[in-house]
Image (cartoon, rainbow, N blue to C red):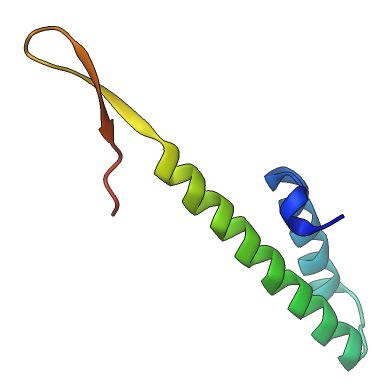
Length: 76
């Protein structure tokens, strides 16, 4: 399954597993490089997902007339 088709939680679990292997196992150089490359690809997809989610978040504010309006989340 392509990383873009997986849930954010699934991607994070995969990333955590890769990091654990990199930190704890005696990997040969080729395997360590491959795990590192996979981790960076997962980080990129996760960051894209978080950026997209942040853009979708709106804040509801009450106007002086008592009406509710959507206000975009500040991009800080």
